[in-house]
Image (cartoon, rainbow, N blue to C red; front, side, top):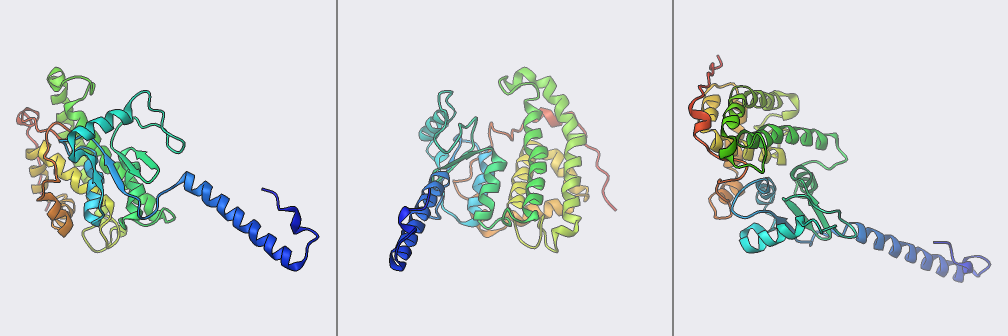
Length: 300
């Protein structure tokens, strides 16, 4: 936008008026661009779009809202509406809109005119807004994301692969033998490996003096770890009980209990808003543990 002609060769009063008018027009134009790009005022409603009937990956997002005490619309609470929204969102003909590209799969978060997918992506969008992480301008923000991604790899993605090691499109019964092999590796190698890493995080100087993974305050990564430990304990109760009894990962399970006892989380877990585990990421198939003996050497 070029300056108006009246700025040149005019009286002082006209000049000031022209400058003011020009500045206002520039500000309005910038506001229009900003609004089109990111219309997420504090009063915009948060909407979570996910499948009904299972905690799934949507649960990581719910826990942030519940801990922060921030209202949100959970479409999974109305099953018919939830299924319709997920199907519409992931339809091959859905090409997104002027501001948002199409979504591959839920969970999805709608906030004003912003639509986001991918669980870790949603978490880093929400966490600073809900007071559950430092701002993205601080290095700690990325350290937290680093921890969250690692924890989700070990106790969400890999847990899902224990019962669907070949293809998600196949029934569990059609890949049961492979699931037993994958579960054996998870129980004997992967679960201890990731628990040991989380314990290292808790033992590090950046963890602070409390039970939390970073600093002296609860962050969204503590909530992520809680859900991962809770879900994995449902899927592999014997394994997690033995790993806990080893004493090697005392900080991990102490953090789990600390999150569980936080007032807002405790209230949420006791409510009907908390979906029960069923056929989502975390599934309990006794045969995946029954033939495997986990040898755990107690720490001294």
